[in-house]
Image (cartoon, rainbow, N blue to C red; front, side):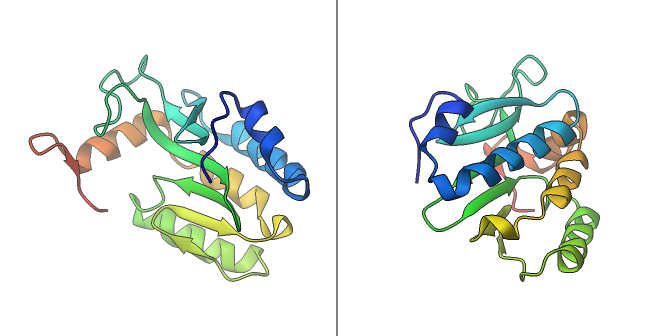
Length: 159
């Protein structure tokens, strides 16, 4: 479900009432834990955390007018989604997260390529998501992104 909201606050107002409190808490824990240098924006119809053009002028290879995406949160039709582009870029972080999730969450991890899905707001491990947000700095994300990008073909390799 892609939103046309122009601000995070407007986006949150559109979310079903039963998800609002959890979504606000999720946003707050991410903002509290993200390393300095990421910026909160609206992008792709959801709340995003990006490396701004002021830090990485090249922007996102798919659309250089867009800042480099790192993390997003969204209220989808059947779940709350947390997208973390760096989770697959570092095998140690992926291993840490999947093991920690198994210990801290009563529910089995529902995860796709960079997407964590939580069907019930009470299933979100807020502290763990906050810790995940803190694991990669903007400089580390830029280095990882550039490592996998094929500038000649304008593609990013699958991690």
